[in-house]
Amino acid sequence: MKRTIKSLFLFAAVATTLVSCIKERDMNIDPAKGVANMLGFTYSGDDVAGSSSVYSRFTSDLGSLKANQTVSFPVNVSYMGQNEAPADITLNLAVDTEVLTQFNSENGTNYVVPDASIFKLPATAVIKKGTRTTQVKVEVTNNASFDFNKNYALPLKITSASSGAISSNLGKAVYSFSARNQYDGLYVMEATGPMVDVTSAALTGYYPLNMYLITYSGNSVALFDADGVYSKNYFHPIVSGGTSVSAYGSFSPIFTFDASGKVTSVSNYYGQESGGNKRSGMLDPTGVNKITFNADGSVKQIEVSYIMTQSVASPFAPRTYFKEKFTYKGQR
Image: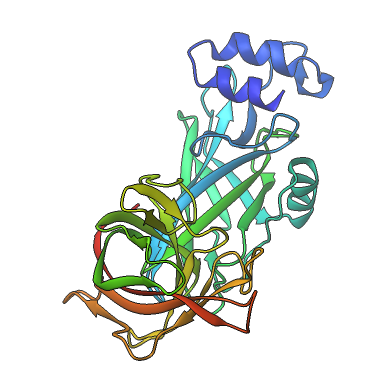
């Protein structure tokens, strides 16, 4: 019923659609006036919850966040039904963890509520007289508590209102959000030295290519085949026999940085010693491993030297050497 109410509300036939959906609940009906106006969370972006979910989920991509940067996402609340608000209506908002527990169970998700220091939720929202909707902003800060490895969501609830009835299902909603670290983006990957596979001279580098560096943690990114040259996934494309595009199975590098812009380590997205060949990533300290920043602090270029190792024959035996430069093109 949640999806029917929401989708039809977005079209013109407000009164008719709400009659057909809300009339199932006797408590929502005023016998003298027909369908009562209801208060609830509405269309803060697309509702991406599963069809069996009681509560809506709205999601926001906060973009790339620098350390201690604060951004916001919108939360819309509405007076839904035949009429506009007859007077100013003050709604009290709060986080309800039971909503998220139920949502995760119904949708097979693992969202968690962020630490209280990460977000700032307005305690109230006011729908002005003669209107139907108001919007408040939830602020999110990339501080020391922000964990890029967690799936964050705020399960919100209208706890009370100065007037009007709160919808039993639309009066609660889940707002998920994700952020990207400052290194995340679309890059041109080029070689600063030949790719060398010590076991096969037929395997060579494939450059230049558009590649994504995707947030893995607050200070690391994983390599992703942006154009699907081999497969649009976490792979490093190579060339076999001079013409055939290939990739190393169970391997894609994760680059980790420190605050100064130094590349401090390289590991494998699929896990160290992954796959039948037990492949891992390793930094090559003899090469260049640094970030070049623009004047505004944004990433201009990343240079990295690393090794794909294989432990199938001997522990962390070097298999392939890479020397690469990633030049930032824009957001992915």
